[in-house]
Image (cartoon, rainbow, N blue to C red; front, side, top):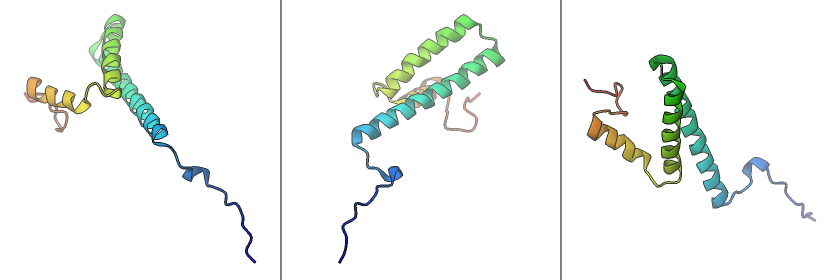
Length: 99
């Protein structure tokens, strides 16, 4: 005689909806972009002596562009392509700028 037991679901294996997954991806992308911007702004401040006004202007411009990337109005790989084709900056190479 088998008893019907309700099986407990491992919370780590809890199914998620596609909307939950998309929200998590968007949040992770946004956090990664903010971290990359923070690293970049720190370099501009520490190594290139940008003043606070320049840092704020750079932050606002990068924040706007990163929002457009997160919202998928701009493809980040297109930015990489533009840097390479128009400015000679190849971010996929070990040495990004060709002299």
